Picture (cartoon, rainbow, N blue to C red):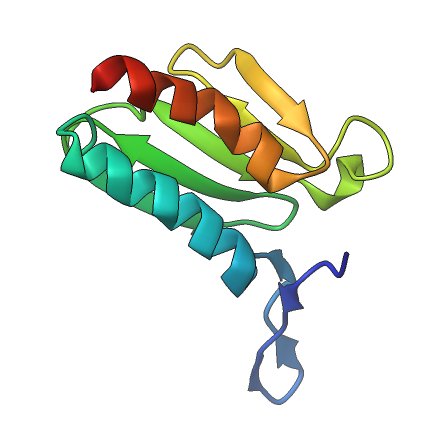
Length: 115
């Protein structure tokens, strides 16, 4: 799987630092689960952060809260534990793996309970 990084030239001699980002297919998987949870009334807002070593999709129950869940992509862990992880509000890793669809199943179980 290819790691998507972006670099931008800001002017002569200035280059923006490479950042990890989600690929379109990865966002489709995440937004599919997100849309179902919004329809169920469980989630209300989200935020996306693209940092130097991690991309984070944060899910909020209300806008001015800490994220309920964080879906992280850390390409450096791809050869070890897996580059995808779902973290809870308290920072515990709920699921980690190499395939985003199987990692996201931990959130789909919550959807079944919500309905």
